[in-house]
Amino acid sequence: MVPWWKRLVFGLVGWVIATCVAGVLASIWVFIHFPAKRAVSVSDLFEFWLLFLISALAMGVFGWLMGIPFVLLVRNSRGWRFWIYLALGTGIGPCLIFGFSLFALVARASSGSLTTGPADYSAVPISAVISSFTTLIYLLLLQRARLARNGDRQCGSYIPQGLKPDDFWWFWRHD
Image (tube, rainbow, N blue to C red; front, side, top):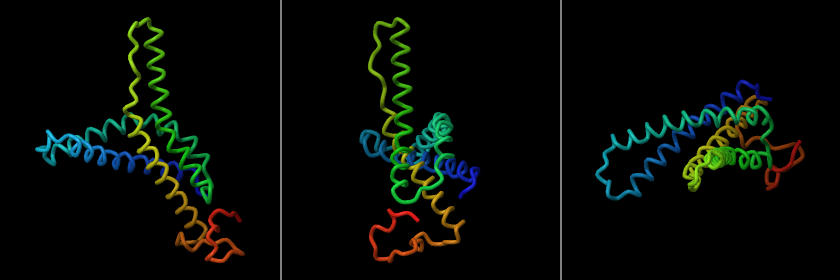
């Protein structure tokens, strides 16, 4: 079993790496989809990426703090659990954005504002990307630490006893 403090570090590392990757993807998307600004220099793209990174890290701290209980609960990510945890972890970010948007909508409506306007869901796709990358990196780091702790240095060397290496479904079974 991987210690709790390592799982917290894995979650934090995954979140920071995923946020950086999402910033790079957002910078590329801005560069491609705004042809009028094709004369954008590399320094402008770096400035956009740095601004995205700072804002995503500042806003994402709350999401990472909300994800700590899930990080501490996940101990075994073998087989089908890996895919379930990946699906659940991917949904954390978009659920938080939907929750914040719903709270803002209700708060505006209860304040007596006659024009409530539509809720803003523009951050849902990028939060889904960050959540899915974070969860994937966390689960892969957890799997690697578990295998290293058990003495298996290569991920492919783990085959449960009684199964042949050519058995396609061996990774779904449990010891």
